Length: 550
Ligand code: G6Q
Image (cartoon, rainbow, N blue to C red):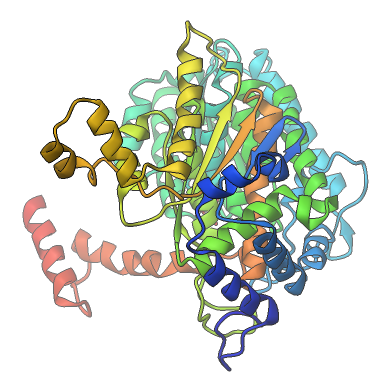
């Protein structure tokens, strides 16, 4: 093992990286750039039309060699192979992890439990194509014969965030006349605000739930079913409700015709499921041909990930850079900032992908870990966030590595908007890297005509420490193919980190305790049980809520 472990043993690669850190921590990136004009070329990778420039990281060849040695030591190539071979790498749930099979375009078999999963995947894909085409071309109509133009996805977590993010990212490709809505939160507001806008005769509800037992989704689905039945009657349900699930029994129990069910399987984790039947709303919104392009983009990244040597492997390199900061610089956070309005939900999507996957504390040998695992991820669309939390990124005492994402071409080339946007993304990474010394700030103040006293008073406030790392992911345009690549890139990055940290990135037991306690508290709030067995804070909050609601 590596890191600070039970027996306090650190592996060779880990110790080497610790000493690299000691050597490197004071080195300034601006000096490295000045000393080597090939630095950017050296630390740039490209897959199709997606470029990763990672030269603005606190690395040199020795650091990279150390990180790659760690990946080798952790047996990363074999672990990548194990995932593609359908080995049960989700060991706490005894499951294969085969979202890669959902976008396998090779025509080759992929196995789970010794069985080829491709025939069933292709069968559901065909069903998704036929159904989305039928809705789009008005062949599958509502109960009263009207075209279904309002599509509502009811799902939460992995059954919501992927579809929302992709639909928004590809908004420019939306089929004319189709409108998409998403209901996820149990807060009645989510339901009410969507239903208020809709006409039952033209509305299709997609109930997206892997387990079909999730309280939020089922409660929202029941409310919507009631709304529809009140307007059109029970017989209308078959024409207005479809289900995406692994759980046929519960779908039937809920009252959805199993013919209207699109299946997926346990080897698809919720947060990795947008490529499965969970992507149905994407197919309807942008057409199946664009959904296929999304799959093809992801497949291109899968192939790169599966075959490229570690040193040239984009997801591996991003994973190792994250580990470098997380475990050696003790920087346990990073930000993802897309400079594309259509990618505004990408940070929220990646937040789940990363934090639910790698927010773990027990290793594969059943020990509590003694080293940092998954970082905190946050973000938002540029340039908006430059006017909010970027202050801290530039001058705060916390260092936040950033992934900047930008398309060279916008879907809306209006005037010089996009050039301004692009100049900003480049300026931000340059500013973070280069900074501004106190002397430089003083010089600037003097040049601006400030007197000696003013220069002294302001020069520190106007300085920037710099040496703050970032990656830049540059692509030509955010189309379905590029988006597929981008999402798969992060999926694999997160997987590699989980493997280096020796944790299971594919379960999510940490979301259970809160759910369990909510089930106890609900009857107490509804007055069908007495509040007992809580701490005094919870007890008095229950009391206060009841008093307010009287
Ligand atoms: C994702 C998680 C979680 C899940 C939701 C919804 O990996 O498992 O976010 O997607 O809890 O679950 P259902 O799809 O089963 O309703």
